Image (cartoon, one colour):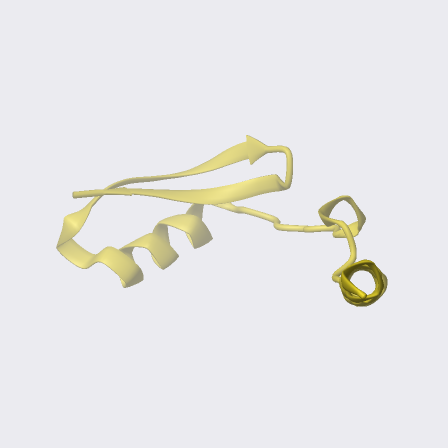
Length: 73
């Protein structure tokens, strides 16, 4: 009797795992992020976000494209 219960439990866990795998999100490699950065726009956005705490703003090349990086205190 215990063997049948264990087999049923294992089958139920396997079905739940397969359901999550089938309906899970797409892998991150399939996502495309396109970001453009211009220095004046980056500076404006950083000043707007950090006000007097802003030290510097710069466009940096990353694996995702050019990103605006705000350096602040």
